[in-house]
Image (cartoon, rainbow, N blue to C red; front, side, top):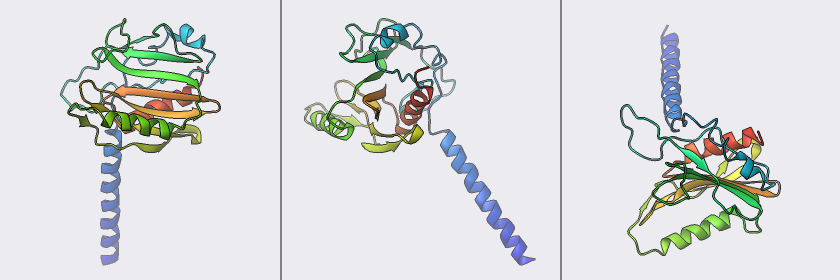
Length: 207
């Protein structure tokens, strides 16, 4: 009898633990933008002219690392393809206005793809962090570190955390596919949401 009671208690503890683990996981990523599925329709023809296979996310986190508020309303976000486009690549700006050119005030995030450079993602991100650390402005940093991440289809990428000084940078996840390098970024974004965003782009492929 006692063994049965102990066994039941163990099962209860495991069940409660799984419940809270699942609950924590579901809260780890921000809600999706309402128009994420159609966001790139207007700029897709421009991006396709790059000749680089597109990786456009179907999940875009509606918020970065900001305190949760009741009755939160996701922002209205537009996608623009600034001109000129990068040589041998593409760039889409996600902005709070339809004419955002990537400035800090209007930029929500960025999506890019291009030919893979000789420099590794890790080297590129470490150089970025080194340059940022030389600024004389008082900084506010993400608590999440630069880290290697596992993505969909067995792809390995890197997460670059955001930093705020006179302006705030995008948190990014970058990865290589074949001879191309892709990146998704959101200002003040968190690691879990950026991984989910990158995975949605990988899984969507060229659709």
